[in-house]
Every structure is written in C-alpha cells, then in structure tokens.
Amino acid sequence: MKEFIRRFLRKPVLAIEIIAATFFITVLSLAMPLYVIQILNRYISYGFHGTLITLTTGMLIAILLQLGFRILRTKMARAVNQEPNDTLSLEVLTIVSQAKAESFERFSKPRIQEAINSVQTVQNCYEAQILNTLIDAPFSLFFVMATYLLSPVLAGFSLLGIVIGLFTGWLSIRKSQQDSEQLLQESLKHRNLNYSAVNAFDTVRVFGAIGFLQNLWQGQLLKINTLRGNITDAKELSQTLTLSGSSLTSVCLYAVGATIVVQGDLTVGALIGANILAGRAYQNITRLVHVSYLLSKGKEAFKEIALLKKLPLESGTGSALREYKGQIEFQDVGFAYPNTPHPVFESLTFTLEPGKALAVYGRNGSGKTTLAKLLVGLLEPRRGSILADKVNLQQLAAPWWRRQMIYMPQEPSFINGTIRENLLLLNPDLDEAVFNNILRTADLKQFLDLTLNGLDTLITDNGKNLPLGIRRRLSMARGLVTNGRLVIMDEPTDAMDEEGVRAVYTTMNNLMKANKTIIVFSNDPKILKGASSVLNLNIKPKPELTNQVMPGLKRE
Image 1 (cartoon, rainbow, N blue to C red):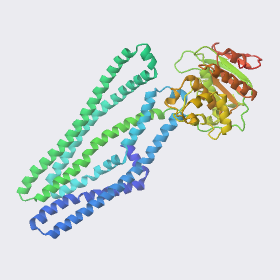
Image 2: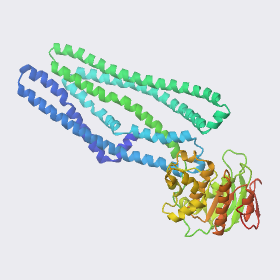
Image 3: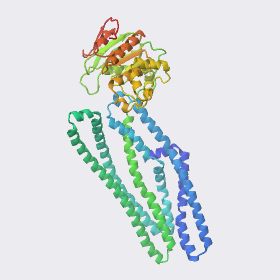
Image 4: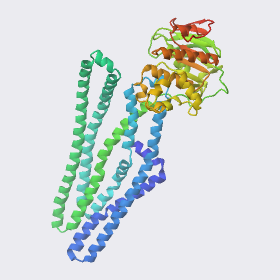
C-alpha cells in the first residue's frame, strides 16, 4: 500500500483527476438502483409510457458517461504506473550491468533471475486495474450511504456483511502469504537444482547422477506441491467465502426488508434498489481481498529487488587520460577473497613500461584470472594500488579504461545477439576493411563461411553452445576491435587447435611490433619465452618477477 500511495502522490494533478473521475463513476453508478426504484414505484404503478422513456433515456446516458469516465480513468491510472515501472526496470538493468563483479558473483544465478523476474511481478501488481480497485473501495461507502437513506436497518446489515467478508478474506490471505514466502524459498532451491542438472548434463549422464538428482527432485517437488496446494486452497476458500458472504447479505436484506415492506415503511422498489446498492458496495470493497493478495506478492517482489539494490555499483564517474601510453604499475598490491584463510598474493610491486610484454604463469588456482580481473577493473585490490600511466585505476572511469585494452578472458561469454553485434560492442563504427582484417587475424573466416548467416548468425545461450576454440577466436576478435594500448590475454592458447594457436602467436607478435603493452596469463612455454619479464604466481605469498631479454614468439 505504501508503494501505491507513493506512486499516486508522485503526480498530484493526475491523482486529483483520477479521484474526480472515480467520484463521477460512483455517482453515475447510483443511476441503476434509482432507475429500478423509479420503474417499480412509478411506471408499474401508473403505466405512463413517457415516464418509462424518460427514465430509460436517462439511464442510457448515465451508462455512456460512466463508460467514458472509466476509459479515461484507466488511461490516467496507467500513466501513474508507467513511469515507476519503467524506472524500476532500468534500475535493475543498471544493477545487473554495473554491479561490482565480486559482490554480484556471490548471488546464485537462480536468485538473480528471481530478482529480475520480480520486476514483472511488480508491474503486474501495480497496473491500472489494481489502482482503480483501491480507489473504488472508499467510494463504495456512497452506496452504503444511499442504502441508509432508503433504510438505516438495511444499511446496517449491508455494512455488517462487508466487514465479515473483509475479515474472512484477510484470514485467508494471511495464511496464503506465509505459504508464499516458504514457496519462494523452496522454488529457489529447486531452480538451483535445475541449473545444476542443465549445466552439468554430461556429468548427469556419464557418472549416473540421475538417482541422486531424483531423490532431491522428489523431495523438493513434494514440498512445493504441498505449498502450492495450500495457497490454492486458501485462494479458493477466500473466493468461496466472498461469494457466500454476498449471497448471505442479500438473503438477510431481502428477509429483513420484506418485513419492513409488509409494515409499510419501505416500497418493493426501494427494497430491490437497496439490495443492488448493497451488492455494489460489497463487491467493490471485498475485491480488496484479491488486491491485497497481489500487493503482498508485490511486496515480496520488492524484497527480492531490494537485495539487488544493496549491491555496490561501479563508479559511473572518473577521469580519463588524454592519451594512454601503456604503462602499468603495481604498488604493494595484495588480494584475498572473503572467508579464505590465505591471500591469493600480496606485496606485488613492479612496473611494466609501454611496449613491454609480461607473462604470468602458475598452477591452477594460483591467481592468474584474479590478477587479470584486477587489471580489467572487475576486482579491486585489498591493499595497494594499480596505476595506469601513474594514475590509480580506481580514479579512472571504468568504461573509458576498458576501451584502452584488448581483453581476452579465460572463459569468454557473449550476449544473445548476432556475431557482428557482439564483436563490435566497443567500436560499432569500425571500418569494414579493418574489421575484415581482424576476422582473418583471429582465424574466423573459415568458421563464418561455413555458417548459414555469417556475421549475422545469432549467438544463443551466451555462446555456451559454441566450441571453446571458436569462442576464444571470437573473444580475440572482439578484443582487437578496440585497438587498445594494453593487451590482456588469459590462457589464449588453451583449448585451441593448431591453427588457432598459430593465430594467437601471430597476433601477439603483431601486437609486439605495434608497441602494445602485453600481459598474458599462460603456462605455454613459447609464450613464456617470448616475454620480456615473467611473473611466477606459484611463489606465495609474494610472487617472483624475473626479467629476461627474448626475441619474441615464433609462429611454429
């Protein structure tokens, strides 16, 4: 409800117009019971056709006016919700695209997906129809007041029926909310299991994990189905009680009203009109039960989104050098992951001058990829500083800095778009001739010629369905598109065939000739021999740096 009020008050003029439209809709809704009363009391009693024509004409006008006000109000209510919904969607996209990698990766993928899906849940819970229902509820008291003018006793029964209907509905919704919270937690566990089975389908088949998965699956499904059944039962009970309450209210009104008619204190037309008024009031107010259930789902969705909003974002501001020459300097850099007993490395100090090549090697888990992510700005040092041309990386604007590098990660991933769109993300206006030369350098021509749509081939599943060697070629081409001064390659020859390895060697030699600063993370002996200095991450906690003078990489 707080969110509804916040949205409603963001545009006070529009809010006043919506309230005014609701007032006119309510007043025009009184036309039907008045029409029935007049027909029964005047036309049937006297049979004058002019009365029937006049009343019917007025009723038709009221119906048309009411229709117009309802359409207008719905459009205004949509306008109230549109901007907050769009803003929320953009906020979540900003978080997903700009959250600091270390914090973001602590979330499981199903949890992140749940938070993203929560945006749609919020939009569904705060749409025009829901807003209209909330506004209609207090105006329904007009119907009770009109009933009171006909008969205070019947108005009392009408109000009592509404209170009982709201109370029973509230009890059902409260039970449903508790089950919904548990269902969310169990559904997340089940999605985690689904992701595990899908992402490791070879393990499931080859190592016989199906039995293990089935045991977990069945246990989770039993809990989920039980909770869903409880929620369905609660909703059905709520609807049944609401309908039964409406029927019981009508029975009471007619039973009590009939005695008042017999006593001569109420006409038959007034009795029927009072029942219509009471029915309208009951229907409008008890619709709040369903709305409150939806709003409770919206509240839970906001909690999921709030978890994402707590994630720290990369700074959107920062400086940019007029020209980056390619120098990289580490000053007493140390890094350790949270909740780990030992640092990945510490006291790392060295300077890599422009045009020089540094090879970083070490066993698996020694910190090669961690160091690469520090350079790219995906991670931040726990201690010390990394400088680019004497400027701390944390003072530089991240988007600008990433355009200064040719980056080839160890596990390349792509967005779901065409190959062309993926390769040109950082330089969409690249000259076509230059682009084609990059494709040849990355040894992609043969692959593209064999695909049906070439560069317009769609990448799906973030490229995971492509062979790793092709992904690495695409990653190399994507990096070369920037023509940055700093080259960062993480295991560039890993999983490459002979032609791919030659393409990597050739590319690195060309980059050396172009006086690029190169930092390559690899255990490839040829790459290690071709570097001007070598950093050994196997030495802990302070890695060992060795300078050497070598002619460069050989292609064979």
